[in-house]
Image (cartoon, rainbow, N blue to C red):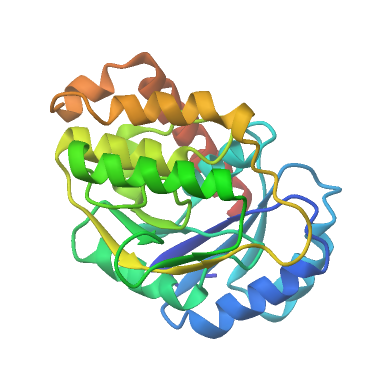
Length: 265
Protein backbone atom coordinates (compact mmCIF):
# COMPACT_ATOMS: atom_id res chain seq x y z
CA UNK A 1 0.00 0.00 0.00
CA UNK A 2 2.00 2.95 -1.29
CA UNK A 3 -0.57 5.71 -0.72
CA UNK A 4 -0.25 7.23 2.74
CA UNK A 5 -3.72 7.08 4.33
CA UNK A 6 -5.49 10.16 5.66
CA UNK A 7 -7.21 8.15 8.39
CA UNK A 8 -6.36 4.94 10.24
CA UNK A 9 -9.45 3.12 11.50
CA UNK A 10 -8.54 1.04 14.56
CA UNK A 11 -10.84 -1.88 15.41
CA UNK A 12 -10.02 -3.98 18.50
CA UNK A 13 -11.44 -7.48 18.11
CA UNK A 14 -11.85 -10.65 20.13
CA UNK A 15 -13.29 -13.77 18.50
CA UNK A 16 -15.79 -11.87 16.37
CA UNK A 17 -15.76 -14.64 13.76
CA UNK A 18 -17.77 -14.02 10.58
CA UNK A 19 -19.48 -10.98 12.15
CA UNK A 20 -16.39 -8.90 11.32
CA UNK A 21 -17.19 -9.12 7.61
CA UNK A 22 -20.34 -7.05 7.95
CA UNK A 23 -18.51 -4.49 10.09
CA UNK A 24 -15.67 -4.14 7.58
CA UNK A 25 -17.99 -4.02 4.58
CA UNK A 26 -19.92 -1.15 6.15
CA UNK A 27 -16.74 0.80 6.86
CA UNK A 28 -15.33 0.17 3.40
CA UNK A 29 -18.59 1.33 1.87
CA UNK A 30 -18.81 4.54 3.90
CA UNK A 31 -15.17 5.73 4.10
CA UNK A 32 -14.17 7.36 0.83
CA UNK A 33 -10.99 9.17 1.90
CA UNK A 34 -7.67 7.27 1.69
CA UNK A 35 -7.71 4.95 4.69
CA UNK A 36 -6.21 1.94 6.36
CA UNK A 37 -8.40 -0.28 8.50
CA UNK A 38 -6.48 -2.06 11.24
CA UNK A 39 -8.14 -5.14 12.70
CA UNK A 40 -6.19 -5.51 15.94
CA UNK A 41 -6.26 -8.97 17.55
CA UNK A 42 -4.54 -10.38 20.63
CA UNK A 43 -3.69 -13.87 19.37
CA UNK A 44 -3.09 -15.49 15.97
CA UNK A 45 -5.85 -18.05 16.59
CA UNK A 46 -8.53 -15.38 17.13
CA UNK A 47 -11.60 -16.44 15.12
CA UNK A 48 -11.80 -12.95 13.60
CA UNK A 49 -8.52 -13.28 11.70
CA UNK A 50 -9.42 -15.60 8.78
CA UNK A 51 -12.58 -13.64 8.00
CA UNK A 52 -10.78 -10.29 8.19
CA UNK A 53 -8.00 -11.62 5.98
CA UNK A 54 -10.59 -12.75 3.46
CA UNK A 55 -11.85 -9.17 3.25
CA UNK A 56 -8.25 -7.90 3.08
CA UNK A 57 -7.71 -10.15 0.07
CA UNK A 58 -10.24 -8.16 -1.90
CA UNK A 59 -9.55 -4.72 -0.41
CA UNK A 60 -5.97 -3.73 0.50
CA UNK A 61 -7.20 -1.04 2.88
CA UNK A 62 -7.86 -3.78 5.45
CA UNK A 63 -4.96 -5.17 7.48
CA UNK A 64 -4.90 -7.59 10.41
CA UNK A 65 -2.48 -6.53 13.14
CA UNK A 66 -1.27 -8.68 16.02
CA UNK A 67 -1.22 -6.72 19.28
CA UNK A 68 2.03 -7.37 21.16
CA UNK A 69 1.28 -5.18 24.20
CA UNK A 70 -0.77 -7.78 26.06
CA UNK A 71 -4.37 -8.93 25.93
CA UNK A 72 -7.39 -6.74 26.41
CA UNK A 73 -9.16 -3.91 24.59
CA UNK A 74 -7.02 -1.10 25.97
CA UNK A 75 -3.80 -2.75 24.81
CA UNK A 76 -5.32 -3.51 21.41
CA UNK A 77 -6.46 0.09 20.92
CA UNK A 78 -3.14 1.42 22.21
CA UNK A 79 -1.19 -0.80 19.84
CA UNK A 80 -3.42 0.06 16.88
CA UNK A 81 -2.99 3.81 17.38
CA UNK A 82 0.75 3.41 17.90
CA UNK A 83 1.25 1.65 14.54
CA UNK A 84 -1.25 3.82 12.62
CA UNK A 85 0.25 5.39 9.49
CA UNK A 86 -2.24 8.24 9.13
CA UNK A 87 -2.22 11.62 10.92
CA UNK A 88 -5.68 10.76 12.26
CA UNK A 89 -6.73 7.57 14.06
CA UNK A 90 -10.40 6.73 14.57
CA UNK A 91 -11.27 4.04 17.11
CA UNK A 92 -14.47 2.11 16.44
CA UNK A 93 -15.92 -1.14 17.70
CA UNK A 94 -16.47 -4.36 15.74
CA UNK A 95 -19.97 -4.94 17.12
CA UNK A 96 -21.91 -2.51 14.93
CA UNK A 97 -22.65 -0.08 17.77
CA UNK A 98 -20.91 2.86 16.05
CA UNK A 99 -22.04 4.59 12.85
CA UNK A 100 -19.30 4.22 10.18
CA UNK A 101 -20.75 7.16 8.23
CA UNK A 102 -19.30 9.43 10.92
CA UNK A 103 -15.70 8.24 10.63
CA UNK A 104 -14.91 10.84 7.97
CA UNK A 105 -16.69 13.63 9.89
CA UNK A 106 -14.61 12.86 12.99
CA UNK A 107 -11.40 12.65 10.95
CA UNK A 108 -12.10 16.02 9.31
CA UNK A 109 -12.46 17.69 12.69
CA UNK A 110 -8.98 16.51 13.62
CA UNK A 111 -7.70 17.64 10.23
CA UNK A 112 -9.10 21.08 11.06
CA UNK A 113 -7.08 21.27 14.26
CA UNK A 114 -8.74 19.52 17.21
CA UNK A 115 -6.73 16.80 18.94
CA UNK A 116 -9.75 14.74 20.03
CA UNK A 117 -13.05 14.52 18.15
CA UNK A 118 -15.79 12.65 20.01
CA UNK A 119 -18.93 11.00 18.73
CA UNK A 120 -21.34 12.09 21.47
CA UNK A 121 -24.41 10.18 22.60
CA UNK A 122 -25.33 12.89 25.06
CA UNK A 123 -25.31 16.15 23.08
CA UNK A 124 -28.43 17.40 21.26
CA UNK A 125 -29.10 15.07 18.35
CA UNK A 126 -27.29 12.15 19.99
CA UNK A 127 -28.90 9.03 21.38
CA UNK A 128 -28.03 5.76 23.07
CA UNK A 129 -30.24 2.80 22.15
CA UNK A 130 -30.06 -0.20 24.46
CA UNK A 131 -27.25 -1.28 26.74
CA UNK A 132 -27.25 -1.83 30.52
CA UNK A 133 -29.19 0.88 32.36
CA UNK A 134 -26.59 1.29 35.14
CA UNK A 135 -23.77 1.70 32.61
CA UNK A 136 -25.82 4.33 30.74
CA UNK A 137 -26.44 6.20 33.99
CA UNK A 138 -22.75 6.24 34.90
CA UNK A 139 -21.45 7.30 31.49
CA UNK A 140 -24.10 9.99 31.00
CA UNK A 141 -23.46 11.59 34.38
CA UNK A 142 -19.69 11.33 34.04
CA UNK A 143 -19.98 13.03 30.66
CA UNK A 144 -22.20 15.81 31.95
CA UNK A 145 -20.07 16.64 34.98
CA UNK A 146 -16.84 16.57 32.99
CA UNK A 147 -18.40 18.87 30.39
CA UNK A 148 -19.87 21.32 32.90
CA UNK A 149 -17.12 21.49 35.50
CA UNK A 150 -13.88 20.27 33.89
CA UNK A 151 -14.61 21.90 30.50
CA UNK A 152 -13.34 18.89 28.56
CA UNK A 153 -15.02 19.92 25.30
CA UNK A 154 -17.41 16.97 24.96
CA UNK A 155 -20.46 15.64 26.80
CA UNK A 156 -19.36 12.05 26.12
CA UNK A 157 -15.79 11.62 27.34
CA UNK A 158 -16.30 7.90 28.01
CA UNK A 159 -17.37 6.88 24.50
CA UNK A 160 -14.67 4.91 22.67
CA UNK A 161 -15.81 6.13 19.24
CA UNK A 162 -13.40 9.01 18.81
CA UNK A 163 -10.82 10.40 16.40
CA UNK A 164 -7.38 11.44 17.58
CA UNK A 165 -4.45 13.35 16.21
CA UNK A 166 -1.77 10.68 16.15
CA UNK A 167 0.85 13.40 16.71
CA UNK A 168 -0.95 14.40 19.91
CA UNK A 169 -1.22 10.79 21.08
CA UNK A 170 2.48 10.18 20.50
CA UNK A 171 3.38 13.27 22.48
CA UNK A 172 1.22 12.51 25.51
CA UNK A 173 1.36 8.69 25.43
CA UNK A 174 -1.40 6.23 26.33
CA UNK A 175 -1.18 4.76 29.81
CA UNK A 176 -4.43 2.76 29.92
CA UNK A 177 -3.92 -1.00 29.86
CA UNK A 178 -7.17 -2.58 31.03
CA UNK A 179 -10.51 -1.67 29.46
CA UNK A 180 -11.95 1.05 27.27
CA UNK A 181 -10.82 4.01 29.35
CA UNK A 182 -8.49 5.34 26.64
CA UNK A 183 -11.24 7.69 25.46
CA UNK A 184 -11.50 9.45 28.80
CA UNK A 185 -7.71 9.39 29.33
CA UNK A 186 -6.91 11.23 26.11
CA UNK A 187 -9.84 13.62 26.56
CA UNK A 188 -8.65 14.43 30.09
CA UNK A 189 -5.08 14.99 28.90
CA UNK A 190 -6.27 17.34 26.15
CA UNK A 191 -8.33 19.26 28.71
CA UNK A 192 -5.39 19.63 31.10
CA UNK A 193 -3.20 20.82 28.22
CA UNK A 194 -5.95 23.22 27.07
CA UNK A 195 -5.93 21.67 23.61
CA UNK A 196 -9.09 21.72 21.45
CA UNK A 197 -11.67 18.95 21.71
CA UNK A 198 -14.84 18.83 19.60
CA UNK A 199 -17.89 16.60 19.31
CA UNK A 200 -20.61 15.58 16.88
CA UNK A 201 -23.87 13.83 17.77
CA UNK A 202 -24.10 10.10 17.25
CA UNK A 203 -26.71 7.40 17.66
CA UNK A 204 -25.15 4.45 19.45
CA UNK A 205 -26.82 1.03 19.12
CA UNK A 206 -26.20 -1.77 21.57
CA UNK A 207 -24.56 -4.78 19.92
CA UNK A 208 -27.00 -7.23 18.35
CA UNK A 209 -24.73 -10.28 18.29
CA UNK A 210 -22.53 -11.74 21.01
CA UNK A 211 -21.98 -10.35 24.49
CA UNK A 212 -20.37 -7.12 25.60
CA UNK A 213 -17.05 -7.51 27.39
CA UNK A 214 -17.46 -4.28 29.34
CA UNK A 215 -17.12 -5.11 33.05
CA UNK A 216 -18.13 -2.10 35.16
CA UNK A 217 -16.58 -3.41 38.37
CA UNK A 218 -13.27 -4.27 36.75
CA UNK A 219 -12.86 -1.10 34.69
CA UNK A 220 -14.32 1.46 37.14
CA UNK A 221 -11.05 2.24 39.00
CA UNK A 222 -9.32 3.20 35.75
CA UNK A 223 -12.23 5.40 34.68
CA UNK A 224 -12.24 7.13 38.07
CA UNK A 225 -8.50 7.76 37.84
CA UNK A 226 -8.89 9.70 34.59
CA UNK A 227 -12.14 11.35 35.69
CA UNK A 228 -10.29 12.87 38.66
CA UNK A 229 -7.28 13.73 36.50
CA UNK A 230 -9.46 15.90 34.22
CA UNK A 231 -10.16 18.34 37.07
CA UNK A 232 -6.53 19.28 37.71
CA UNK A 233 -4.84 22.59 36.83
CA UNK A 234 -3.45 23.39 33.43
CA UNK A 235 -0.36 21.43 32.41
CA UNK A 236 2.33 22.11 29.86
CA UNK A 237 3.43 19.37 27.50
CA UNK A 238 6.75 19.28 29.35
CA UNK A 239 5.04 18.73 32.70
CA UNK A 240 2.90 15.95 31.29
CA UNK A 241 5.91 14.35 29.62
CA UNK A 242 7.73 14.11 32.95
CA UNK A 243 5.12 11.71 34.31
CA UNK A 244 6.87 8.27 34.32
CA UNK A 245 3.82 6.48 32.90
CA UNK A 246 3.65 8.87 29.97
CA UNK A 247 7.32 8.33 29.19
CA UNK A 248 6.92 4.55 29.27
CA UNK A 249 3.88 4.76 27.00
CA UNK A 250 5.79 6.83 24.44
CA UNK A 251 8.67 4.35 24.50
CA UNK A 252 6.23 1.49 23.82
CA UNK A 253 4.74 3.44 20.92
CA UNK A 254 8.12 4.11 19.34
CA UNK A 255 9.10 0.43 19.57
CA UNK A 256 5.79 -0.66 18.08
CA UNK A 257 6.11 1.71 15.13
CA UNK A 258 9.68 0.57 14.42
CA UNK A 259 8.60 -3.08 14.53
CA UNK A 260 5.62 -2.40 12.27
CA UNK A 261 7.77 -0.51 9.74
CA UNK A 262 10.26 -3.38 9.67
CA UNK A 263 7.53 -5.94 8.95
CA UNK A 264 5.99 -3.74 6.21
CA UNK A 265 9.39 -3.21 4.62
